[in-house]
Length: 113
Image 1 (cartoon, rainbow, N blue to C red):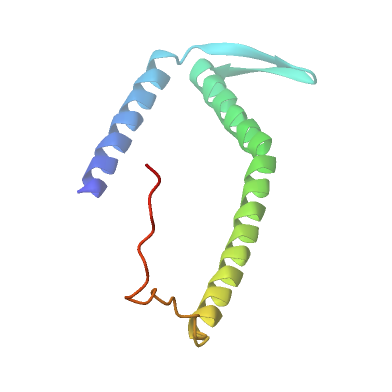
Image 2: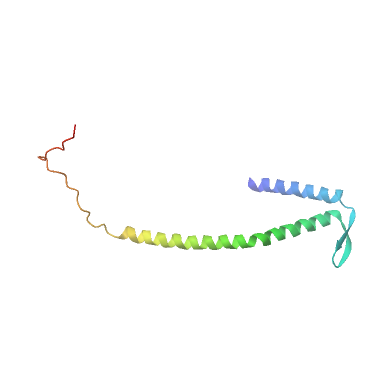
């Protein structure tokens, strides 16, 4: 079911992108440091979008790497704690001191009035 929904969304985005490209097919002058070139407006927008995505990925790489290291460290800690817990579960219980009840002939505690 999700495959069909993904396909419909993809076709919708593709249709919108193609209609945008057709509506903005006029050539524009793209000036950059080393020269200039005439490209269609839709192509210039697409190139700008791709450059923005690449810049965003590069900007977030530091955070992604830091979080992956932290996940790795936490997994190692969790595995060590699981191993410790497993070893503690296999240890026999020591005899705990028995809590003795007072003898039945003991006087009850007196409450202050």
